[in-house]
Image 1 (cartoon, rainbow, N blue to C red):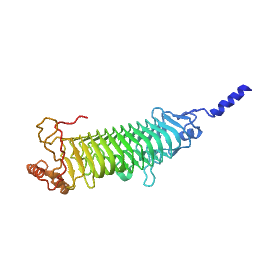
Image 2: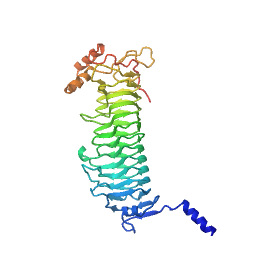
Image 3: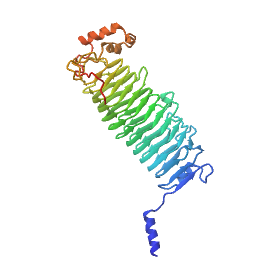
Image 4: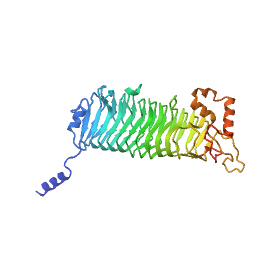
Length: 411
C-alpha cells in the first residue's frame, strides 16, 4: 500500500512524461499535423527525411519541439502558410519549408508565430517563400541560423524574410537572407537585438525599422540590397559594428535615417554605397569611429537635423564627404580624418592647424542639378570648391572640423 501511495505521489508531480513521436513516409504516423494532434506538452516530434506535402499545419496551445533530420521538406504547394504556431515554450529546427503561396490579402509565411512566448526557431531552410518567419504579438524568442531565400521581382508580390510586428525581446542572430523584399523588418517592436545576420540582394531593404524603439543591431552585413538599412520614426537605437557595402542605385544608400532621435552609430563600415548615410529630421545622433570608404556621398544631410555629433570618423576617398541641402548647420564635427584634407600640422601633435570644410560647393550644385555630376573631375569644379572654402556663400559657413586628424584613426 505504501508503494502505491508513493507512485501516485510521483504521478501527481509529473502527470505526463515527454514522449518522442516519429514521422516518416513508412512510419505509423506519416503526417506532421497528425503527430501534432497526438502529441502532449513537452513532446518532441522527430521528422525523418522525405517530402511532406502539407500546409496550414497548426500548433495551438501545445509546448512541442519539432526536429527535422536531414532537412525533411514541407512543401506548402503555393497554397498558403506552412506552419502556424500559437503557444509557449516551443522550438522548430532542422526543417526545409518551400513553396509558400503569395497573396494580396493574407501574409502567408513559412512559419507564422502569433501570440506566443519563449520560443526558438533555429537552423531551418526556407525557400521560395512569400514571408519567411512572421512574428506578431510575441516575445522572448530566438530566431537563429536560418537560411531564407526567394525570387522577389516586385515589391507587391513579395514579402519579408523575417518580419516582426508588435513584439518584444527577440534575438535575431546569424541568419542568411537574400532575394526577398526586406531582409529583416521591425514595426512597433522593442528591446530586440539583431546580430550577425547577412542580408544581401534583397529587393528593397536589408533591414527596415518602423516605429521600433530601444533596439540594437550589431555586427550585421548589408550588401547589394535596393538599400542597406532604413531606420524610420524610432528612437534609442544602437547601431554598432555593421558593414554596409555596395548598396548602389539612383535612389539607394547604405543607411537611411528618417525621424530618428537619440541614437548611436559606432564602429560601422560604409563602403562603395551611392549614399552611405542619408539623414532627414534626425536629432542627437552620435557618429563615432565609423569608416566611410569610396562612397558617392559619405553623409548627406537633409532638413531638420540638429545636435548630431561626428567624432573620430574616417572619411576616405568619397566623392563627397558631407552634403547639405541648405546653408545652416547645427551639427558638430570633431577630430575626424579627411583624406581630402590638405592642411598642415606645424606643432606635430597629430591635429591639423587649419580647420577643414567638408562641404563642397559642387555638392550643393549637384543637389540642385543632378546632371552636373558629369563635371565632377573637371578643373573648373576644383576652382569653384576652392573659392567657396575661402568665402562660403552657398554652404554652411560654420560647418567645419576645427581639429582634423592628420592620420587615419584606428579603432
